[in-house]
Length: 229
Ligand code: DC
Image (cartoon, rainbow, N blue to C red; front, top):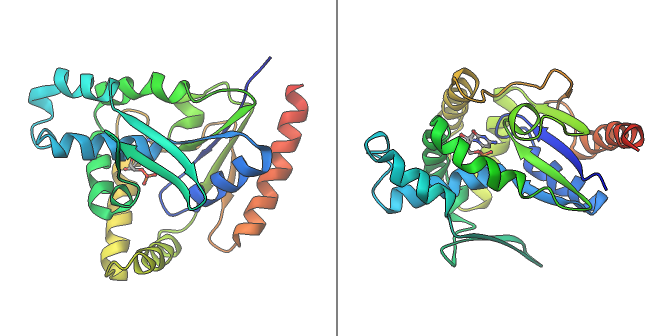
């Protein structure tokens, strides 16, 4: 039986994570948060003092990427993320670990090391894959591909609210500058740059509510899945 894969790519703060979770619940599919894998690898390399000296220790870092001890555990409070059996769900969502992830993400050897791990998430009945290169590199044969974007300003506003709710102090100008810098790095990097797949549905969520985006996505996915049968 064909395993259905639905990819949702886009920049950070576009609402991808929230929407991917809702869509996975709606279809009862598995969920791959590929950004979390990059964050976990960044955190793991930083803990081992390897992030600063990545290029000089590439073989060791690739081994670490291949053997990362991670678990995603569904609980009533949401998905808990464990690294080496330690709960790092909160720490991987910080700006600091986001910056670690973004440094890992530009290294082709590390992206390659994570490739098979990501593909292993494609299990019956289906998978929602959330990331930057899900539709272009990791799952080019996906039945439905969505590219969710939003203006940098509206993403910065959402991020400030999210950080404040986590008790972190956040200034809109700093966050906006961070988002713009990360977009540039993600879009201009040589390997797997952030861009819509040619066959992706592009949705701009700047002026839409989550429910409106959700409805557009489900309408599109239903059509694509009907074609796949
Ligand atoms: O979506 P996120 O903010 O958790 O992603 C963290 C970093 O990892 C971000 O800099 C982009 C990178 N990333 C990537 O290069 N490819 C992916 N499929 C997912 C994330």
